[in-house]
Length: 82
Picture 1 (spheres, one colour):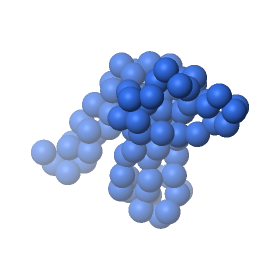
Picture 2 (cartoon, rainbow, N blue to C red):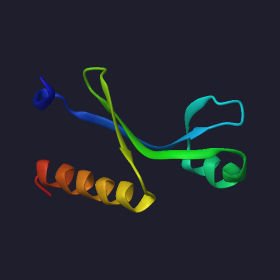
Picture 3 (cartoon, one colour):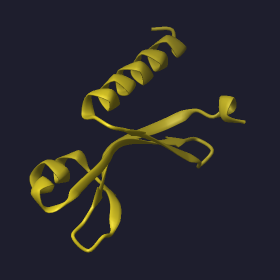
Picture 4 (cartoon, one colour):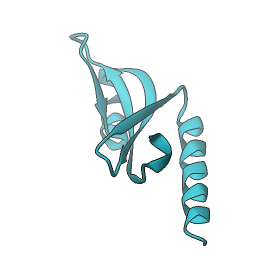
């Protein structure tokens, strides 16, 4: 059950399409350096859980993704009693 999972890692990334039509997730840093060579499809958070599962949440903008990271961080702190 999803409620029993514990979030272990969050990987912010960008999904892009290269000139050959291949779609892949890349780091934000790589995208910043190579944006002119690929088509941006979405920003994404890949969340990995302690049970080995993963979840992806896609966003239309960096700001929307950053807002979600802030919400996840706040929820994590409140869950630890900070």
